[in-house]
Length: 225
Image 1 (cartoon, rainbow, N blue to C red):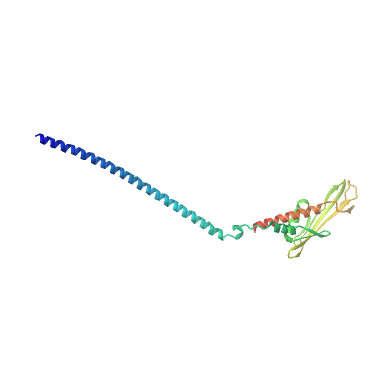
Image 2: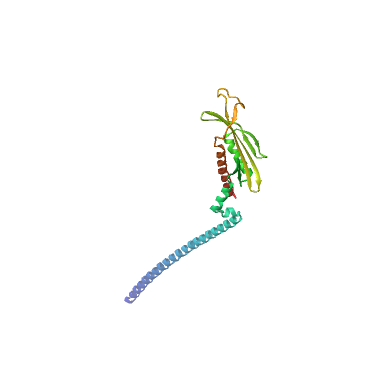
C-alpha cells in the first residue's frame, strides 16, 4: 500500500514538472513568434518605403529628363541669354546717336523708320502738329509763342528724315524763330513778325531726347531677340 502511494506521488510530481516545462517552452515559442512577426511587419513597411523612394527618384529623374527635353526644343536665346560685351554695346549705342555733319543736318546708324517715329512722338508731346508726311518722313509743327526777356517770340520746327544708305540715316532739323515787332495789345497774325536768331535750345533738346529714346528702343529689341 505504501509503495502504491509513493508511486502516485512520483507520478504527480513528474506531471507538474512536465507541465511547467511545456509552459516555459510555449512562452519562449510565443516570444520568438512575436519577434518574427514584428520583424516581418517591419520588413514589409521597409520594403514599401524603399519602393516609394525608388518610385519618387524615378519620377524625379523622369521629370528632369522631360524638362531637359522640353528646354532643348526652345530657341537658343531662351535656353541661354546672350550677353554682348560692354565694349560692343557702347560702340553700337554710340553709332545710334545723332552726329552733326553740317549746319542743321545730323547722321545716325539707326533705322529711318525708328528715328522718324521717335521724333514724331517727341514733337507731338510739346507742339501742335500742323503737317505729317509719313511717306517722305517729314513732320512740321505749328507756330508756338513764348516770351524771352519780355519780348514775344514764336518758333516752328520742321524735321525730315532721309535714308541715305543701308545703315545710315540723315536727319534735317529746322527751328524757325521769329520775334514780334508790333504792340502786344494788338497782335496781328503773319504781320510784324521778323526772323530772329535761334535763342532757344529746342533743337538740342530734340536731339538729346531722340538719342536717348533710340538707344532705349534698340536695347529692348536686343533683349527680345
